[in-house]
Length: 211
Ligand code: ADP
Ligand code: 5GP
Image (cartoon, rainbow, N blue to C red; front, top):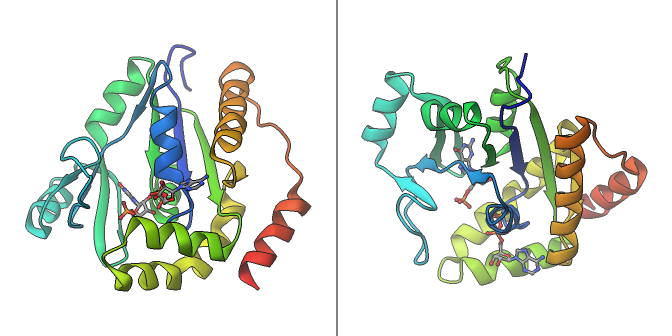
């Protein structure tokens, strides 16, 4: 059983480009929220900082961490490996710090399946439309059209996983979306309950995204 003084696990997943990293970075500015920094074999983007955005490693280093059983979860995403180390996460949760995870649906599934004693609240972030998602990915990964098309290809599979999450947001206006997330988290921490959502509205939005 989780202790009242323990921190919470707060997971964010989405199709690539929907805005979860942006939202997690805004949340990190709030008191007592910390981002779990993952390890990845992906090459750094020009604005990414080692140890802040990711720990960038090669596949030998990543495989060594797998062998040593250091990962809480790891997964292959877009042909690269991504993983979360157990130790820093549990140290922080024990101290009462809330940990934000920016991970894909596979990693979220692994964490949820582990019977962890800490409470988990999971968000799925949807884009307003496929066109806007494409625009956001193209702006972010400007130099690499291949990356954009690779990520758009996975969109249809990724988006279907919204059903496995506690709370779904549509990231249209960033500030509005951030306020909705803050409200849901504050409510969860205070009352351990999840604000009820209009599931039909979300389903309709997803159907439109998939059409
Ligand atoms: P993800 O982590 O889900 O792949 P990012 O957070 O990297 O997505 O966002 C993808 C791009 O879209 C970034 O360039 C980011 O600045 C931009 N972005 C995120 N949210 C919004 C928003 N609500 N409105 C406009 N642009 C956004
Ligand atoms: P990006 O390359 O855009 O930073 O991330 C690609 C995908 O990998 C995103 O869905 C992101 O959430 C996911 N990801 C990042 N870190 C981890 C991690 O530690 N574990 C898992 N399973 N996915 C991760």
